[in-house]
Amino acid sequence: MTKCPRHIQAKLTCLLLCLNAAAGAHAMPAASCTRPEPGAPVPEPEDLRSHDGVLELELTIRNVPGPNGSTRYCYSAANGAESPTLRLHPGDLLVLKLRNALSVEGRAASHVHAGPLAGADPCISGAMTATSTNLHFHGLTVPPRCHQDEVFRTSVQPGNSPFEYRFRIPQDEPPGLYWYHPHIHGFSSVQVQGGASGALIVEGLERAVHEVAGLPERVLVIRDQSLLNPDAPPSKSEPVVPRMLIDRDGDSANNGTGFGRPAKDLSLNFVPVPYPDYPPATIRMRPGERQLWRVLNASSVTYLNLALLFGRAPQQLGIVALDGVPVNSAGATLPGVQWRDHIGLPPGARAEFIATGPPAGVPALLVTRTVDTGQGGENDPNRALATISAVADAPEPRSALPTATPPLPAPARPWLGSVTPTRVRRLYFSETLSDPNNPNSATAFFITVDGQEPAPFDPASGVPNIVVKQGDVEDWIIENRSTELHDFHIHQLHFLLLDYLGMPVDEPFLRDTVNVPYYNGRTLQYPSVRLRMDFRDPHSVGTFPYHCHLLEHEDGGMMGLVRVEPADGPAVR
Ligand SMILES: [Cu+2]
Image 1 (cartoon, helix red, strand yellow):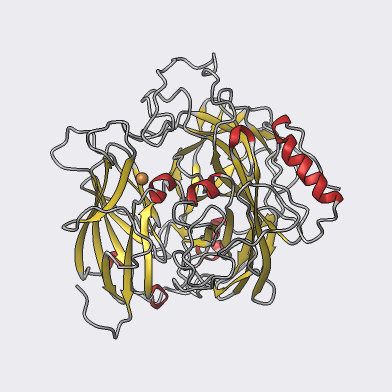
Image 2 (cartoon, helix red, strand yellow):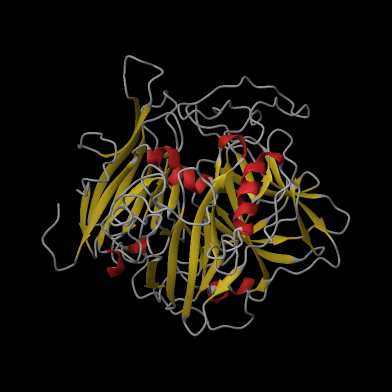
């Protein structure tokens, strides 16, 4: 029997689901996009592990109406697991059959109605509609080809037979946290914000960082969603009552105070932490216990700045990997743990860190602190996420890292930081009004190669903005000419952050997302980052995007294409 949610606004969904259940909708898994109540214990996503080098699963995406006119999207495996964590070792084969059960109305129908596009070949369809979907495997260096990690021509329609993704995790993929989500241009934001995301773990982090061997591990997926209480005034406990402003995306604008209405509510493994009172979710740990927390910011637009407070005192968090890459990647003799009292995570980014449970009786909170997104950015205020309660008999997380595994082999290619780049390119983020004479007209979002004409991304063109050759290493200087923070991301590869705001940084690890600071209108130069881009991996041959990972910006056109030619191909510009 389908379990009906108690939330009054889910009544319609409930009715439909109950009717479907009564009608014997046995073709669909029992999952129904139900969500925990605020304050609930943080559930662990179910693990689906590879066996004998293979992980095979079917994943269904469906949508149902949510509160306040929103739509929930959820992935469920055949066993009913929602947004399961996929766990594979380097070299393992993933066979994932994606079933599209989306509907325009967002109702979990017992029969999926095939639309007019259902007859098109999902490998070349390129359809970008509200009920189209596909998958991007964020961070993995797998080829941008159909059935692997191609996101512009690949489009799966309701009524298509399950669409097969089939690829091997590369042998040299760094161990750590990756993730999957849809990437249909124009519809990424609504699907991801509705909840369509899940974690993927490449096993073996303890082989790079022995300090985590044997630790219990916890996967925390932080998502954002439209506000449950959009009209509520800020909590009376807030020290300031900032003026409410709306930004160009229609979200609450950054007011610079750290308080006030956020652009989106957050959830922790789907436990909502709604504005205005932010009732924290609950995590139970044994007093003083060390755990490895694998945290994914799967938000559509929300920046995180995580801290763990005992009382009011921020605790040291031992970062062992960022964006799926161990922090000692430049050399195995480097420290495997970097201790910090806060961790910034833009949308799409991951952090894996050692967290220590509070002593018995000490109140503890996982919080996100305010992020200054600039005058044109969203409001990301201070807020609690979870209470950590120290309980002697707290159940252990389901999974723990192995205690004894051989160290990772030395990388086959020289460290990216020691390679001389083939060339230097300049790109910039910018925004304009679509009608310069109308301040209320829609914003156009661009990422432009310096010298080219700014143009919103055109998925139909397929013409690359940048052409490189496999084997090349390039430096990209990325400026931000807008008044809001952007979040650069590129598919298929990781890069090395060399300079931030013109200052050299010395990071012995790689990233796949990075903040590009906003322009405040006063400096002589636009703020920029300098990235060393690595096109050496043969798996990167093909055409794939780079974009802002604020999905409203990506959907709005802030995206470009790079084509990596085979090493023996023609000369490139
Ligand atoms: Cu952006």
